[in-house]
Image (tube, rainbow, N blue to C red; front, side, top):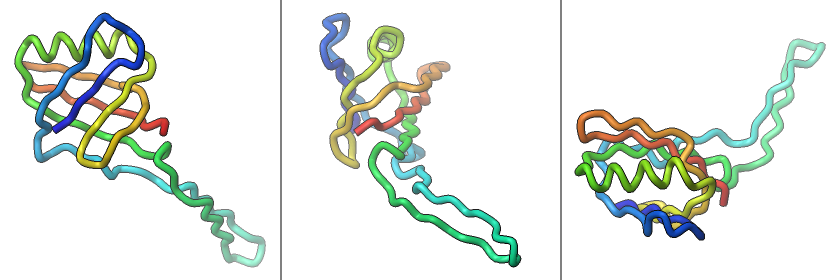
Length: 111
């Protein structure tokens, strides 16, 4: 189950829906760089991983009212809260695609 709410706006209280099994909550890259060295080797620098590196790809089948509420949040809110199977996060709705009752949402975690 996913809940997305505005932090301050009163345009929409928020939306709650069940995500599809095709949703991905652990798509990320740690802060790693690889630099080639003059001797033919490489130096790998791993600076760790934080929640701000995470990207959620959420897919769901939604009714028209929930889709419209989600579109309102997407159009009007820069930062929102999301609660999902992975926990509670603050971030932004980076991309939203709605097609025939099915949505694909990209959420970038801030913290």
